[in-house]
Image 1 (cartoon, one colour):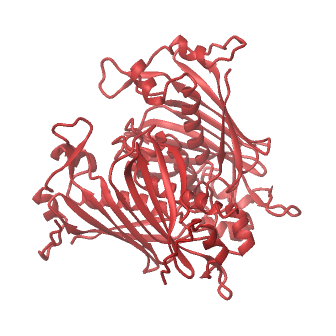
Image 2 (tube, chains in turn blue, orange, green, red):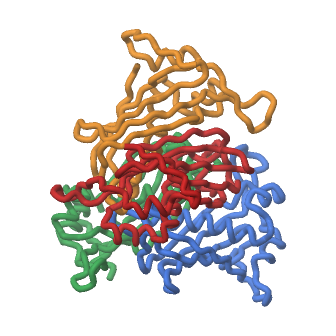
Image 3 (cartoon, helix red, strand yellow):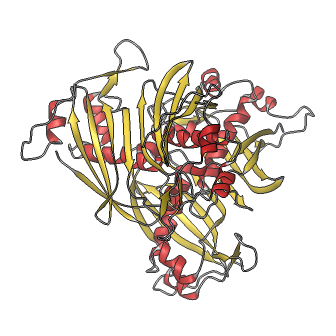
Length: 148
Length: 148
Length: 148
Length: 148
């Protein structure tokens, strides 16, 4: 899969009294990193919502393992890629590296969701457009794993 | 004016590596405290939006002075009241007390805002309903100061 | 196990443009809920750190599944309990209920950690004190599952 | 004064159900922007703390005026400069621009603070080192305003 890389500096307000990143902050980083990955399709988040009529890509499951703490002012690299494509869901895998070593990794399982045709305010999963999944796969044509 | 009091405990994730509350967290507390104050009108935030057709009470100005730091696990009292009523705006004053001493105080100037009648997505200030300002004034009938 | 219950109201600042809770906010709720659960030992978070000489209970793994979204002003109940006790680690299970239905559940695997005896700034897992695990088990004496 | 410019994209998690940036998020941006400005001295935040023996630059006063809302995915420019230097305090002024128009401006009054020589855990204001204030002044040698 296509891997998106971001370089970030850990901010003061992301850290707790133990001097390390307060762990929910990493999930905020995951969320934004997924947005950055999906821009590699050529569409901004808002353009994608508009073009495909989706309300977003809500998270249905999340997980993370913390290996080494990061601290204020640390430079980290966030690597994000789609790990698996389902019909209407997909899993984004994130790795945060500090000095080339894994600090944490995690995943977000998300759903490609449009407005529900009958129930106002509710959402309904839709099939991920083929060009979206294709554009986030790498040039080698490695087969993508189908989830559901 | 009617003063709303909340008792809070400072949370781990609100504190920074210096062991004290990361100051933007106080503004989050202000925002929620204003919501609690306005519930004293008898309407929940969403009920108030619905009844009066407003989109909310956006903040146009904010300020705070920090006197003493608060730390993880500190019990604090947040006192909130409307300081001044304007025609379509008002100022909420907040004080955060720790062990009966002032830790910080601040204000939010907010606008009573409905959807703009002509420009989609924009908002327009509206007159604050008299029953709203009356219900947040105290029983002594102290005259409210008019701002604009 | 002893279950700690908290009642919360979803705050404006916890919600995103889709009108639902921004999911990392739930992890902040998990973190604070674990703190509340551990106060049921009779010790405040800071008193526990002092008494046992620990630096905290850092999270080594986290996971959550989101079933129903919560919105601004929703009243939710957070139920937290230790799911499994290991020698130096434990898993806290959290459930968030809205109108008596499950909105999400998740877990935090945490380590009982003191300062590392040799490497400054580093931490070292320690055995969870027996009275801590006992005080968070229920009155029926249900056997606790040992993890590692 | 030397002006530091950062370009940011508004993140999903920074926005509220009204679709605009939740205002305390701007204060988080202010805090980080001050850190970026002070790196123009040639020292990282942690290096500065170490070299001068300070515990940080705690905020004693903050204020902001919100002119136009920013939304998810908006590109904004944050301009930060020291507005006034005092003996041991200084004011950082921030402007956030969107499409070359002012979205908000604000300030943080901060103190150059070291550990208190007598009271453990407390801090004490110290004189801002001359080379720090000099390095954040512009090349034209414009006189800096003294505050206190």
